[in-house]
Length: 187
Length: 187
Image 1 (cartoon, rainbow over the protein chains, first blue to last red):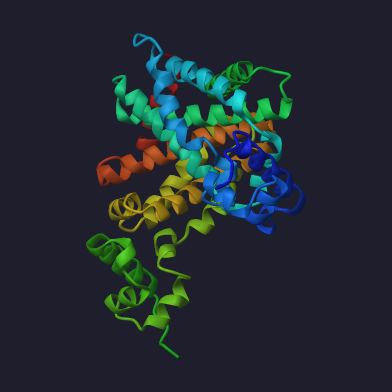
Image 2: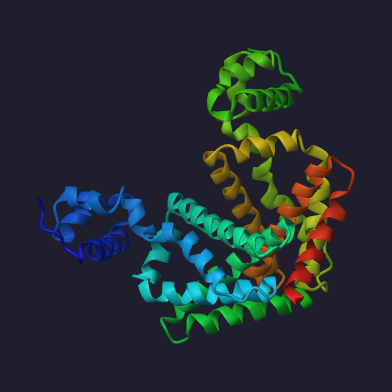
């Protein structure tokens, strides 16, 4: 049995990002990632089902995190401000654990397969927001629209935050994107 | 050589929809679709690369149709009203050629693979709207948000139109979704 290593997952993620960036996602194997992280090939598969999922580690926790973020918003808050409050919470959590986000974006942008996976992740975020809004009593049609809109605002804010490399807080980026959308729709 | 048949594509689409609904997408083969449409198996592949694409016939034309719809909108119209005007045009075109849309929705809802493909289609619509807005001089951040928002409004309007089975025009459904979103964001 290999010794348990608390840093192994992070080392694998970092190694994967470096290799994907240098050689392209398609040209890197799980064995190469493990080797660069100083681990045996089989160790890779204790942490990730395949090399693609290294880029989506933790995203399976997003729906639960979103539900919890909504649960912390006062029930009297109306739907859209509740979405923005929940996204603030989620954004702060993601900002803490984000690893190599700028490189990750580049790697995904270069691969249709990864873009597809990224859209599946976005759809899971949208579905979680929609469910939370319906739990708050919002009708389904409005919940759907606000969930899609919220996801779009969140994606833009996160992109800006990554591009700004920490010069703006994720909260400022969210507020900016929400204001931008509101102004554009009022035109 | 098989005789050219102007109705063959439509017969294949109709046959596919009936079989997918009855047996599930995964359990139907291209050969079965061809047989039900009264065609040889090889004829299927003259019209579609695989059984999945039967459900997405014509969608490769959407980006060009969207660009043309925007080109017909007066350049003085502001971004969001321009999006809504272009979507009105696209909606009217789709309403004319939509085949078995209600069944199509059910079939897609039952298959993660088809949902993934449907998201790829939605992403192509979003990208086309974004490009059209940037061509009109809109900045990239606003174009991205409005393109995602426009796609969401369009999807909801189209769903409503399909569910209403023609009791409302697609234009009415679009106006309703746009108003619903605007009200929800003003709350």
